[in-house]
Image (cartoon, rainbow, N blue to C red; front, side, top):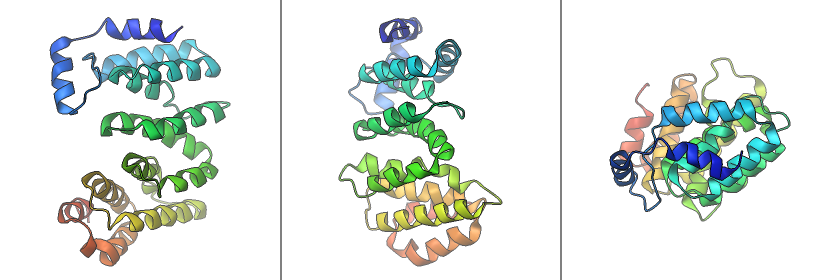
Length: 224
């Protein structure tokens, strides 16, 4: 299957009215086709089942390069799978997308794919750590969104605790940045962490909450 073939399948479900609304909602100049997520889920599931890993990665690459909203979302969904073997090419492609991030929806879909690859090989967090000092806001934000799996363990292993503390260290360096999306990402990480590790979330807020934006503190405390 070529990217043109896949895009034709996506376009078959296009809805001009829905596209107009989505484009306004995302405040985007990118072409939107108005195809809902459940349709993209069904299409990409079928493609995953019919393609081996190299062809899946190649298709994801081609769809991302279309710069069409649904094309990029479908590219991410193609690689959102816990078990991909081998997965170095998939991880490399996902990481190569990060500098292209320019909106939360596409970034979050790509980060969901990246989360699976990080859990499969936590050594890749060294690369993610390098994103935290990027001048590109979306790259910095991605470092928190892509590491959300480490907020979720009720009984974390020692390595998971180390990673949790490492990411909280990154979040602490973000606190002085009052960009809305950065503050929102800090709050998101803390809110999810508070469901499973309230002491760490509370300690972070006690140390840094006064320097955060009030809306971010409120969201971070939602479950505390």
